[in-house]
Amino acid sequence: MKKIISFLAVILISLQLAFSQTTDAEKALLNKSTDTLAGWKRGAVIGVNFSQSSFNNWSAGGQNSLSINGLISVFSNYKNKNSAWDNMLDLGYGLLQQGKNNKFIKTDDKIDFTSKYGRNASKHWYYAALINFKTQMTPGYNYPNDSVEISTFLAPAYLLGALGMDYKPNSHFSAFIAPATAKVTIVNQQLLADAGAFGVDPASYDNSGTLLEHGKKVRNEFGGYVRMVYNNTFFQDKSVSLLSKLDLFSNYVHNPQNIDVSWETIFGFKVNKYIAATLSTHLLYDDDIMIAVDNNNDGVVDATGPRTQFKQVLSIGFTYKF
Image (cartoon, rainbow, N blue to C red):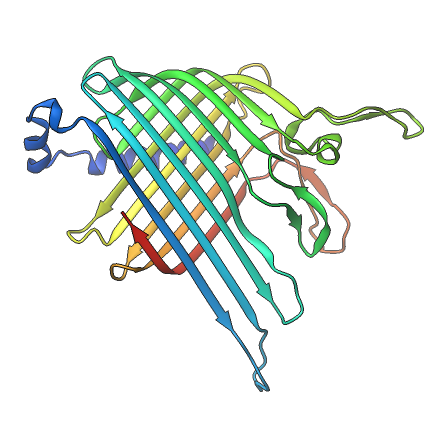
């Protein structure tokens, strides 16, 4: 994990160094009175991607399929001479159906809200506080088994509150460093809590299998937290955009050397005003989340333990930005 973390940090810092040079236009803007930079700045990106295939007496074979993915990313930021308040909400959801009689299965599902407030300490530094909340909308399953839920709304959910310093050298990059951070993991479904899912304390049983005490629905952690965000557009027509968010958390009390990692990246490629392609990736590692692995696909779990999780979504469709 140390190699992964070092690799992620080097990438984001390299991006910052590569694009941190202030242009003449930016210098002219910065030299104006602070009133021109003060106030609210709001925007959003809305994307809907759809694909469908159908086969009838097709000699080469094939399977009917239907998929739809939606993405909403909204921000509302305020800045004046002495303070800055940044708010971001990301919503994503996707469904896929393969075959005429098969059910829709979920391919994406997230709710991610962050609010960060800072008071100016020096030219590029702010005393800052941050709140982050993450969960999902609908139940998740370990397909093809769609009878047992392995996740659902508020199971899990993650609530994080942090106090620290925020480094903002320009409008594209920020690095929030918080030595005092509280992280709460919520598993608001008793069956999952009893199983000890997502790191909560599991239920306890006697030798005969009788339940003695239900599993805990909440797990509290205290530690250090780093959040780096890079957001920029490239080329004169701004046809390529990049948003990258890296979160690192270390629990001071339990295995502080095992750092939780969440790294999300979204590339946007604009074809025209309304048509675009997006490539999103999400890498996760949490030492407290046990993942079962069936190496032989025979229905027997061969090993259980923490694993590096990775998700990638490539889509082309309608996108509207304002």
